[in-house]
Amino acid sequence: MLFMAHPVGSRSLGPWGLHSAPQDLYMVLLVVLVMMSSAFGKLVLVNQQPPQPLPFPKYLRCYRCLLETKELGCLLGSDICLTPAGSSCITLHIKNSSGSDIMVSDCRSKEQMSDCSYTRTSPVLGFWIFSQCCFRDSCNDPQNRVYYIP
Image 1 (cartoon, helix red, strand yellow):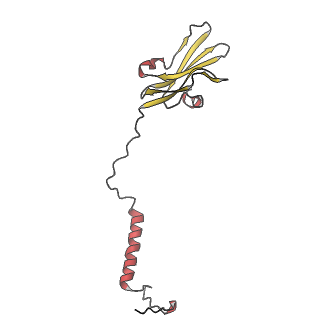
Image 2 (tube, rainbow, N blue to C red; image 1 turned 60 degrees about the vertical axis):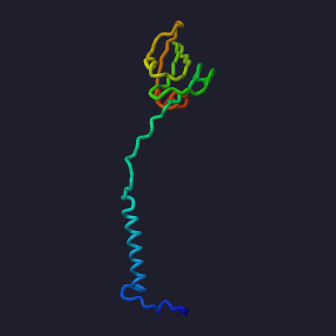
Image 3 (tube, rainbow, N blue to C red; image 1 turned 90 degrees about the horizontal axis):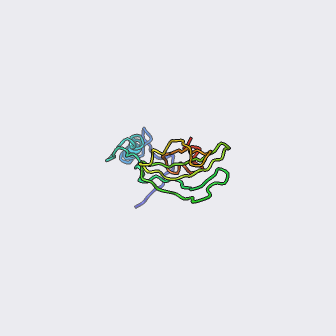
C-alpha cells in the first residue's frame, strides 16, 4: 500500500470542511453523543432508591468524670461511657454561694432522665445541685459544653 502525504492546502474539504462522508458522519455522531451524555447524563436514574436517612446510632457516647473543676479540669475518673440511643449525657454542677463549681459528668439512661433538669439543695449545708442533660455524642465534654449545655 502506498500512502501519499498531501500538503494541508491541497486537501479537498468539501462545502462544510468535511474530509469524507462516512468519516464525517461518525465524527458528527460522536460529537452529538458526547454532548447529549454531558447534558442529559446526570438526569438518567437507573435503579436508584430514595435517599435513606442516616442510621440512628445504637449508642450515645458521653464524657465521664467523677470530680471536675473549671480551673483544674478532671481530677478523678476521666473516660467515656456508652448509653443506649434515646438516653442522655448529664453534667451535675455542685455550687455554693461563694462561686465554687464542682462538676460530675456521666451517662443517663432513659429511666433516669427525670434527673435531667432540676435544681435542689445538697445534703451539704450551703450547696445546691443543678443538673443539665444533652443528647449528642460527647456533648458534655468540657470543650463541647459551651455549645450544647446552656
